[in-house]
Image (cartoon, rainbow, N blue to C red; front, side, top):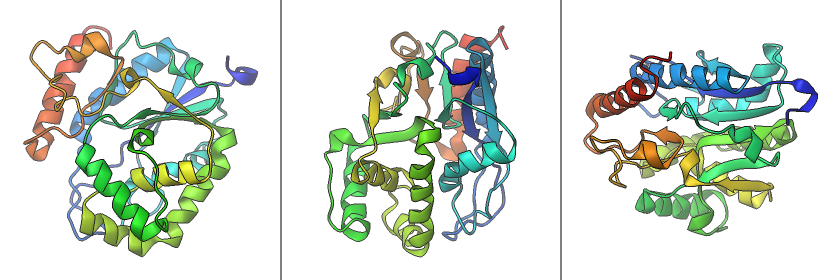
Length: 265
């Protein structure tokens, strides 16, 4: 139940960086084209579940100073600046699409920090944990089966201090983090946030895979007959092999959107 009748918020980051040089010396390539399918589908889901969709279109800080993936942790400040009241917040990556009949995930949270276990990309995850443990967290380790994907997170006002700690960690380790991403190619914020969650003893709840279906290509789910639609609720189109210029991301997101929302949006 929503407290004081404040709405729940679905939060998506869709900052366009086409043609801008990134902090690691690469040219940022916008993936915003397929993201329209994500935004339009979440709009429908939000209307159905009496939620508000909040989209971050502009950088909080220049991305040369802070990668966009880290900037989402300013969400509490962003909502406050926009005078938006809220109960719970669900962050979702912009390469996700919900099934229109997806249950109201907010009702499953128990008002804890919620996420889905990262069931895939095992070598990448293990290398990421090993390197961040060695160079940032003094050898602290946690089990792989406690590692989560940050592409779908549920949280509330009680987690504001935790998010401030995440931001402080970035600013205190900015140069080393950027070097690490460039050297190891094992992501930006996801693994450090995993470490901080466990080291700070954040009370969390793990939701079923159906609520953030990552690595679908490796699970043989991105097939012509789209079996993922029958076994889950929120689909994430990440880690697709041979995905030059995100053409396959666009293909699968458009195909999914047309099947589920073609005559409903």
